Length: 294
Figure 1 (cartoon, one colour):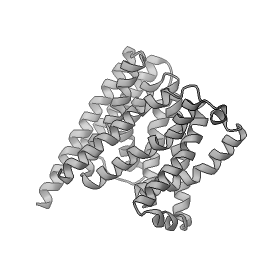
Figure 2 (figure 1 turned 45 degrees about the vertical axis):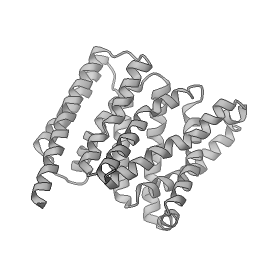
Figure 3 (figure 1 turned 60 degrees about the vertical axis):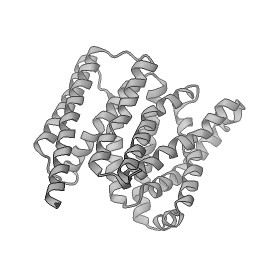
């Protein structure tokens, strides 16, 4: 298999798993979302440390943690990640997965907007069109539903800011994820201790197995994503990221039976058109860059 095909396969697996992970959280709907996140951090630490050891990255983890600046940046990213995880899990188990998928559809456009506001990057015309359509979609949903779609906005903004913060950390994906988990674990252990072990102490074998499995569910997609990011152009990875919210959307409507109201469908339609414009712009920019290099 060529490196490009291998990267494409790994990217599809990574984003496909992220798109389907909501089905796993549904199996744990009887567990409180905050407790789920605590278990995800604890068991995820074991998985990430094992992966870092296999990849020969433990030394890089130790060196990064000796840097006060890196540690400070990773603390901020860990807190953003915890909020994002908690809201997504809550949305999944409480019947708001459609709102969550809306947030992750918006996310690429939020990242572009943050690049403009924070990094002073200049937007191209189609990027402005895409952001305008996404904003119109959110406005329509707010107006017709009579409430701000806070789940979508929190997920899109926390993940967008998370990406921006991780960009300044200058550490590899696996190293960064391992450090974030290390930082979250003490809080998670204290929380679980206060609960007396929570569901883990209840002795239900199926629940215990699923809780322990949250570490694998967290780590495995990252392995494939890291491989895809190394083997594929950034523009291709950008296209693949739409697989995750698409999977969430299909799960919500087909598997979980969440109602797709007219105003929500209209909002999705506007955002999808915006993403199409954004994708065309990415494709043209990547083609121009290749032409310039040759």
